[in-house]
Image (cartoon, rainbow, N blue to C red; front, side, top):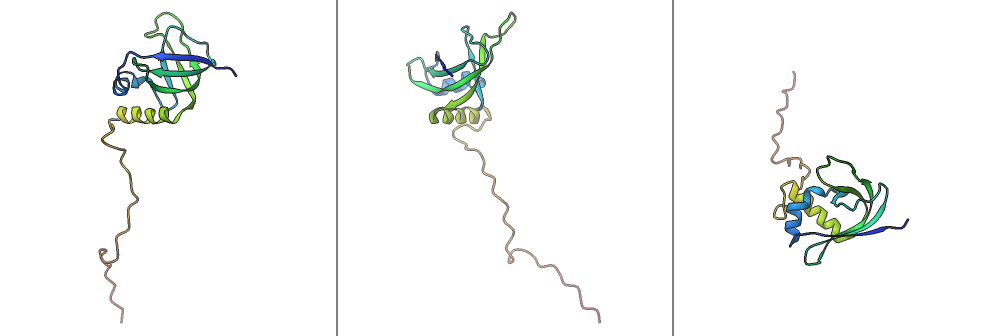
Length: 133
């Protein structure tokens, strides 16, 4: 399948600004691309999101899942389901999802450790019943 190239130049000056202002449009499985140049459903695309200085943020391949067309739409655009992402893009998506859940960079996700059984010294021994005579 041939892929349609799509380069999205964003008005943001930094990755942090992109995460704050556009991050709600990104999920682990895809992205909403605000555009008037809609592609038909099932169109394969290779995409690249770049900051206003030209530095790359997100790059990969995907398939158009929804290309809403019609009046009354709040925003023109299309949803693209990811089929391939480079490692930098996967890491960015992890940061976006962490920021959205309130974890941010300073607080990594909590690690849940399995509860350790108490040691025999710390565990009180049950009283043994008195022998019956």
